[in-house]
Amino acid sequence: MAESRNKTIHDKSYQVLVDCLRQARQDAGVTQTDLASLLSTPQSYVSKYERLERRLDVIELRAICQALGLDLLKFLASFEKELKRRRVL
Image 1: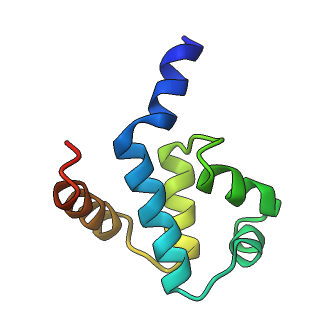
Image 2: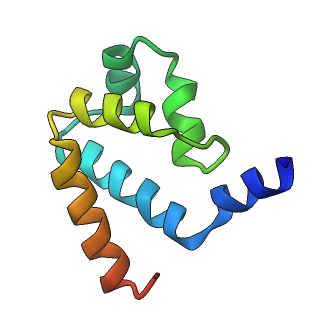
């Protein structure tokens, strides 16, 4: 079971998701520390998912989008476009 969880962190599509989240954070002019504060989490929480050391679930993804002022569905649509652009299917 743990093996399947590790695979998803290293999956190319998960890397694209994290890249999209990092870019959205940077585009919003928000530091890891700022985002962590908005999420009421330590800065290491943001750092760990951005370094692929921690996997996000959909509830966490939704909270991150809300903290960054992003619509979850629009974010997911842009993620899908990025997957296609990078040819990660």
